[in-house]
Image 1: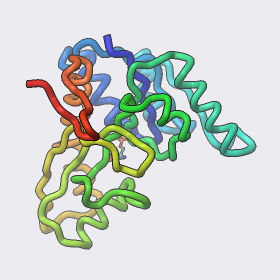
Image 2 (image 1 turned 90 degrees about the horizontal axis):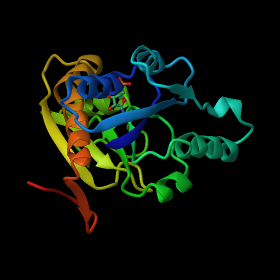
Image 3 (image 1 turned 90 degrees about the vertical axis):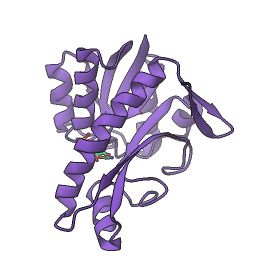
Image 4 (image 1 turned 180 degrees about the vertical axis):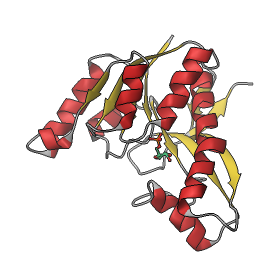
Length: 208
Ligand code: GRF
């Protein structure tokens, strides 16, 4: 059984895709131990509650400085000793200690085809605004392991999505979620839980 912690900041539709997959059996051998949000009002916490999963809030606002927030976040993860941490729309710069402790055990979903439209400042709608601004015809989503850089870790899976002429950042965001994110995040989890994903020389290999 792959025991996971899911970190969220917002609506939690990716969390929902994981919850649904676990319940439906399309993500076998995965157990969600805890959901952690940096935002008390995140709807993702409500989704956790409805699914009977423990949801906790660790907000930077509740701590006098970043260091103490980092310690609290690390503690919230360590307490349940997960095999994997899933960042599902988690808008927090991770404590370096957490990244070190969980090397190749943290995955993130990014709403573009890395290495395009990623890195510092590319999050949420800003990604899709930049895609439309540049006029690319194909975008997508990427699931990757998290390292010390921003969106630089080994890539696990990607899926392309067509950009339409009439797209707004909002319609594009929605299509990227529906066609790519909610597909490749659960799928990546299933592969990891099956022991099929390894990192060799900084690149992911998937057993066939
Ligand atoms: C998704 O687009 C994800 O890729 C991004 O933030 C959004 C989160 O959506 N990093 P949700 O909270 O899972 O609905």
